[in-house]
Length: 204
Image (cartoon, rainbow, N blue to C red; front, top):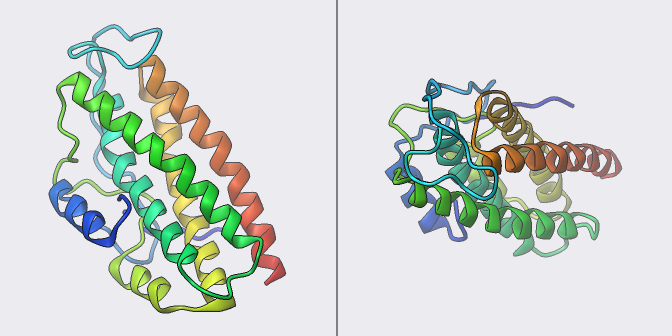
């Protein structure tokens, strides 16, 4: 099942505030686009940990700035499903793993941008693959039981597919060693989770 849709941290209010600051438009349904890209700058990369200010590339900045709100929406979606009753037993551990993995990654990327002297906000008009729109999030908020589990899995598959696309762009265009490693980790972890979610969806 290939579903592509066009989102912060741990509360709905924080989620909405960060997206507003980022100036990022999420488009509900339809195939996503990685949006604008930033050409690489001719600087050296760090071999261990995040590069210092002036020692990173524009692609690395774009990766962190876009992946932070993307991860944050995944955290919010996971929290929504974890707060519901009568969710199938195999779905809640998955949502917990997603939340526990992506929360620290948000903190890590925020730290990089701060160290680089870059804004944690995306440029206005940039779009991200796999983001849920407001209507999608509202449907997940109101759904219950098995219906909510199916919707969560369907949406998160699309969300993960978008993250994988973004991470592969960083793997190709990025230069900072720590950012490159995270992008590879995201691809590996989320491709595995996509397969798991597709299998779970077939059982519901």
